[in-house]
Image 1 (cartoon, one colour):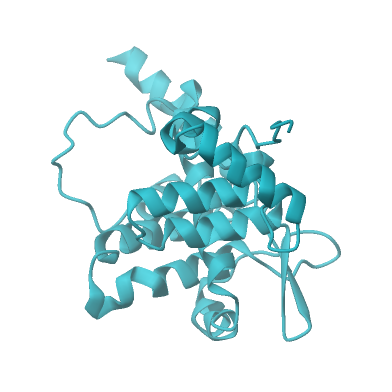
Image 2 (cartoon, helix red, strand yellow):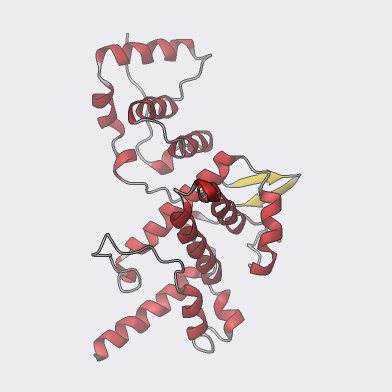
Length: 257
């Protein structure tokens, strides 16, 4: 019996169905052995009705150890580099679209809110009294997904976010989890870009206390009335455009000192 299997090589190669399942698995707190087994089944698209595939899968487990099989998809353990999103979700008949890959079309204002929510989650994810930070994940999803106007992402209005979250409570948890993993992969991608090294310096102290605010909101305020205009215009400036400009200013300031 031939034992050739197609396994996604990267996070971005997961289809939407796999991504939702993997996201749910990542938040399941399963023991490592059960996690490894479940992940392999998702990657191989094992279904109860795919009898031939299931037989081949069982043969595979007999001839190879799970630890050996894991070497063929080790990148899923090494780094979470997901930079694409499940493209859209439908809630009560309304279609909400995700941002473009690598957060290419969001504003610096949206990013400032997302980063503060991200920190909020990290500070509460182990706290059972705060639902393990799930409310922060809901808010992140509500920021990420928008009902586009004429094909364009609408301007972000923070004042409407709390009301929007009430609608997003109807979204499946695995979509919320997948949205968070996508955001986490995108923010790590942005922070890894050499041109932004001065903006996102690598931390040398792993014991540093987790902040509660990213400080990006204050940065937007300080940059207002500059390159991009007043506060409102600066707030709605494209994320990468803003970071490019800020990076240049930091480099210029560093060269002067």
